[in-house]
Length: 489
Image (cartoon, rainbow, N blue to C red; front, side, top):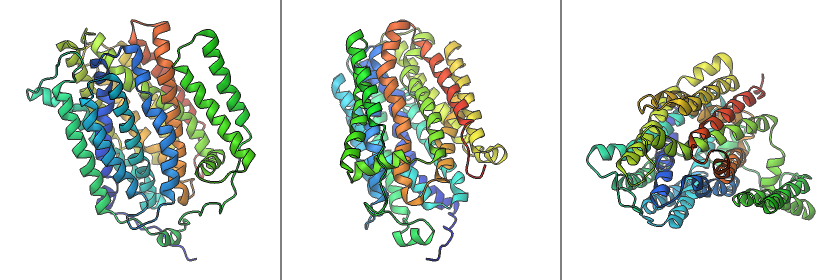
């Protein structure tokens, strides 16, 4: 078959492809800046916050590979990726409407689970969508514009409660009630989510399977058309998980570790069962793709693991750190605490604004020193930001670390995917990006199950030290990126 170069997108073409991410990240901005505040308002202690956030990583671990697998194989009248991010947008909007209305901690955690599941359904196909719609030499530009939308959406999502407070809407409420400024912000986020994703869904025509084949990327592999690889490492994962479960039971460790141990054991059992039965189907193909990851993807996975460990620490613990040390407050119904929580929204908006600007500088720097070194340098800067969060106490000075975090965030959202889409087969963009995101989810699961116990054991009254842990793992991510070998390097 004659192959053709995929056509270059115009600026407005790239704009339409990525605009939906504005709504997705507005929702993420609301979640990241306000969920700990909502949980504390409903009675959660600081050391239980990580466990309540566990819905996100568990959901992403299951949803992202499945959505990637099926979106690669979905070719219908509504397209390949669009049915997934439209469905995810509608479900996310429902979760955004329900979360601040929950009134009960357990119900709020359930809405967070629904929100995370829905955002994962919407987000994963968007990453593959950029790869689908752009030629290889335009992907850095495509992911940079997507990063700009991510930053812009998160700025608005993060700052909305503070903006409504400034407009006179109450940012305090009785115990067990979420302030009106936060509730209204989530309602605005629900509408923005649906409208932004609808813009992309209705303004972009996806390439047909025949067009994708003509571009040199086979349309999609029929089930069973490629030999499956069955990992022999299942017994090792099972033993590791069982050992951790036994250790938790024997030593009376934090019961949240049962989640991690059970997950490792189930992963091992799945590998053992699939290998023994020579099974086929979605799970077998996902496990096979996981076992056959390209070398660069394995190298990137290590950096992703450390990077997202640090980010999850940032999102969970910035609120208790800032409200306690910069605003001197621990009483969640007091004005000082809620002013501090509003300021965390401003800080998060600020780093996302920095990311939106930095996104357009990254391709320029990458041309000079390469994508991997650019990402390593940005991650190292992110580590500096964590160290500054550890020591700074004035609320305005806390914007300085957000500059470093914002530069790192811009790179995190773009550079790994630029490297990755250059080495992946086009007909497997969805599944491999879904699998790649497992290495975003696993560290979040570890933080959610381990960090609460670490706080209780080592610094029960000093959550600031979580920022030191974040700095260390971000530096480890930067070092890991130095091992990544780019295609042609």
